[in-house]
Amino acid sequence: MKAAAASAASLEPSPTAPSRLTETQDFGPNPGNLRMFTYAPPELDALPALVVVLHGCTQSAAGYDYGSGWSVLAERYGFVVLFPEQQDANNPKRCFNWFQPGDIERDRGEAASIRQMVERAIRDHGVDRDRIYATGLSAGGAMTATMLATYPEVFAGGAIIAGLPYRCATSVSEAFECMFQGQTRPAQEWGDLVRRASPHRGPWPKVSVWHGSADATVKPLNAGEIIKQWTNVHGLSRAPSRNETVDGYPRRVWTNDAGEDVVEEYVITGMAHGTPLATGDGENNYGVAGPFLLEAGISSSYHVAQFWGLTGRGVSKKPASTTSRTIPTEKTLPSTPASQERRKQAPTSIPDVGAVIAKALKAAGLMH
Image 1 (cartoon, rainbow, N blue to C red):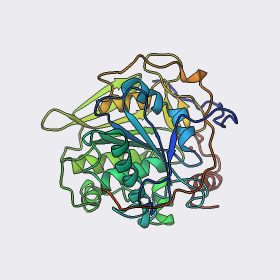
Image 2 (image 1 turned 90 degrees about the vertical axis):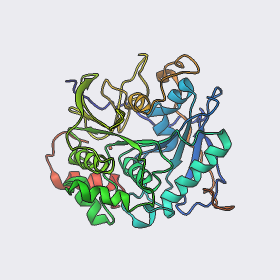
Image 3 (image 1 turned 180 degrees about the horizontal axis):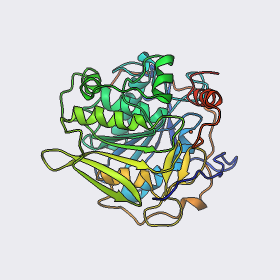
Image 4 (image 1 turned 135 degrees about the vertical axis):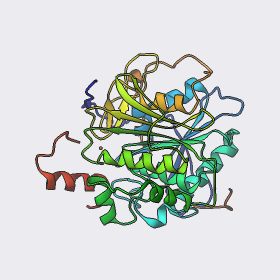
């Protein structure tokens, strides 16, 4: 297996280059006080898909897009990307508040704001309502789990990267437990948390789970609990339908009665906390390595898009390598106002446990 290592490359924005993302300041009611950014490439499918991308702590929408390569994928395959962005006023480390009940319930807080953004993107770009997906890293991964649970009728699929099960935590102390110890529950109990999050009773989003085996910030145990949660929701056996190796890493797949792959798990051997990348000029390489964006020889963004069926046809050849692009600027803009009516990052060993815990809690926005 390949051992993945973090690049020391900086993701500090250039003071001169504009972001390829566009901000929408008035997208509807915004109880979570988030900002909305999108990228719609010049050539779109007639009914394009939409991918909602949720950054991790200390990151920005533009920075995570640059590192993960999602807008480059969107340009190649003709879909729209939506990037909700956290504000310092909500969380000083810019983490999505995945452990706050007021932000992880249907029609409340940050979850409701993201839902509003999805509806605005549908209207603005003629999005296919049957092809809406969500992905995120760390706190953004946990918020992805929230969106899949609270609005399962909206999302056809999701990808949770170095994240946590839905409603693993509803307080700071529980968040501490989930991140550093992991919380083990019966599959039925995990599944019930999703089923109680909305009136929806199926069909359910397909789910992709990615985690580094050496993650010291969010314990890898969490990946297994996410699998338990979503295989239970789908009514699947705990045992995978098949095991295989992709780009040198183990992949487990669960298939439903119709023969469709609906749950998958990638364990990235030796990787710490972050999003796995395959950078460079390869045909299916995307992104730029940096903090929490880790060169691993496998592009999670590409494989997730493939799992969702977004790579079957392209509107153009792959754009020029992202390594030649200039990092986007982060502009300081007013907070997004609410208006109109509602429409529908770590070492592979732990020499000092206390220091590691404190550092990771700060990164997760749970302490100052």
